[in-house]
Length: 458
Image (tube, rainbow, N blue to C red; front, side, top):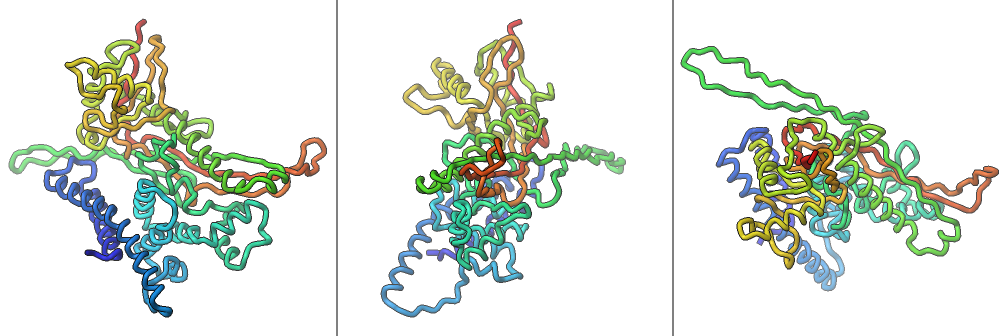
């Protein structure tokens, strides 16, 4: 049986192999050999992830057992936070330390997997990884709680040292790693569903992320000694700016004294507020007025990716097939359905006819796959069918072509010890928390999507 360290090492190797294979495939369709290799690595990675949790529990039991039978133990195994004291710590050491530092947190399986994928994806940014590791320390969590309750004078020396890495130039404090909604997904009822399936990048410098897109190279069949054509592709330069989002919560001094865990509850509410605000923006954000551009807004701007339903105010099987066929094959295999639960139920009703029994009856949950591709529900997706205009309904496409840009560190929170009344500008016994973060979003390649619109009856 492999040790926990061997399991972690193999997971890291698989991640590197998958990244290299993805770069090799690029925008082209994978060959049969490449697809088989990808599927094999993906299956092995899932098996390792399922094996590692029991292995970690077993290692903890062995450690506890040995502690009862010997009073002195010697080990040269580095601690989870030793990398912070090693200026030469590489990306793999920081990734391993981050995973170990957060294994004891109350993080659900899907969230743990998302956390590990995210830190591995951005492991090249060692400063970012080191900051996450520092914010994973228990001293940072306890110090953060004291500061949010206005008890900075009670900070221990260890807490002051830990908090120094999480303060920004504006005086705010970044959330502890396991509470940061940028790093850890919130509960399964989160409305921020689009973030979970989209490409997420971290912008470390400047205020605008600049990418590169291309339709790819078009090859040709030519005769012997025939001059080859110039197949240089046209490159696009999508630019996504970051937008400021903020929230403020106030409470009386009496509430600070009387309500247990007030600061923790407020942090949870901030995380929920971020989810709801971003969830709506990623679906239908205007891209103007300091908002990210939603996927529906981006697609609605181009008739080349719009498909009109066959019948007004009705979603039919033929419309689902048209959406599926409309996405080019190079993106279809990685595509997902994005729709409001209302339309998912409408599609479920299509299965009532014997000739269309491809979805379940009322005793079964709504489908999580349509034509073999995953279904993602979002209450922020449109539901209107006016029949007087082309109303947007369902998106199908490869969401790696919808990019969400975050500034490093995620959400920052500042504690305001006294608020002043607007009458005479004197304190009135209130305190508050000010939370803010910067993010942006837009589609980088609309050709990878199709948008179903309701036909007008006019």
